Image (tube, rainbow, N blue to C red; front, side):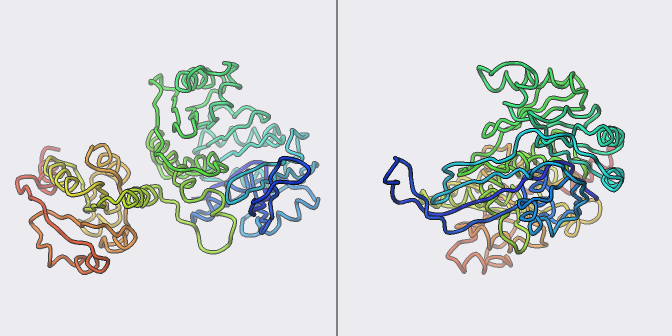
Length: 456
């Protein structure tokens, strides 16, 4: 899967330190800077996220030859970059943080610039893409006529996600989905400031669907999630976001657009892709946001299900509660499952389900399973009131997931012997217990699957 990110690259400078006194000549904090980090921002950040996730990604952009561009060479060295000359100064955004909290941001050269030329190599990269993600930061690249022609031609062939900017060009007609935030959407639709976010997003999104001639508009709402509007005449669909503590929301929109492109490229429908993208953006922020991308090393895992589950466990322990976990494939969720899950939840203060991934289920149950994919299985489980979080694991057994989660109770159905379970010893190693709850033999996923096969 060849993902091509098209857009403007910025230089992001992070200055971190401590502030424990005020300046003697003004009532402002004095920050003792202990670390300065320079990283690629804008489309460069999106490409870096995708590369860290292990995807094959190519960045199509324009670069200057100034000092800031030289500072970008290191952060961009790990990426496949196809670039032309920008003809303008490199935009720089400098953030100052004290004790991890943002204090101020300085922008240099971040306004609109003249439309740059594009090279034959840049256009060739667009034509070779399996997935396109346009990350527009308003520097003129998306106004280039030759580039727009190439993008519009590909829009009818492959998924194209367009993350717009108030100073940028309109998305090309036929884009799969456009991802403005609420402010950008209302401004572009000339709808004025909304009295309420949800009606405002629905109104602005419906206007932009027609104006931009795009397949869908996903209006992001920050902590409120996102509003999905599609061109098939369906009603607006709210995608709620999990609640997370956020010190700095920088990069959340980039994370969402990157996740959305990957999901669409893997064949997911728009609603499912939007749900996963919103949750992965929240997980990105909960894990520290752009701070996790500043250092070298191994890719930072951003699975939203893992982050959500670990956070639920942490919050439960902070309140001296009991963390309960159970596990399985949960293919074709039935009444027996719901009874067992409810009984498990009654034993503690939260219930986390360790769910076999599609690959894990296939190895365990055979090539015809699972019947329902892991994303839908997780969503069905989370729709049950008794389930607080789901942690998807890829391994053949739940031990690695349990090692991360460390529940107080590991619950299985009474068709198992608690002491003979292979994971029982692991649970005991941190003082946990393995317990069983009533098993309902009349309900069997395998029997249901066989009955469905015969009915088909």
